[in-house]
Length: 107
Image (cartoon, rainbow, N blue to C red; front, side):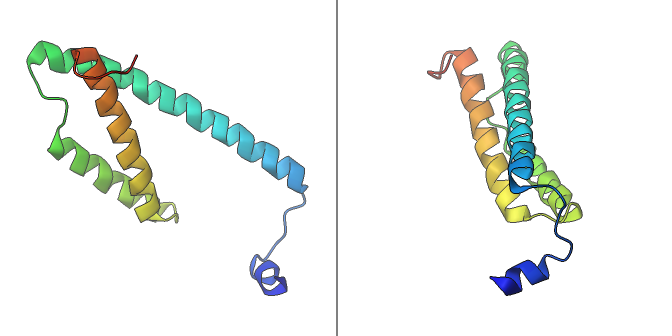
């Protein structure tokens, strides 16, 4: 344990409680962004329905996953984990779109 703390370098001046509150605030912001992403997915569904396009777009999925991988590397966070998160977000968006097209069971 001492070795782990030693490897951290500078220990923040903020208390554990304060840092956890900041994480809670970030989590709430992430939720709001996911909700915004889902709202946009609904709008995309309307465009796809009007254009007779399928919900799943493999080319778009590949591009999104490549983009988030690269952004993760630039941000020095685990790109594989971020891709997994975005696979879930893409699945949620497609489920939302299916709901608009009458294929799904989401509100």
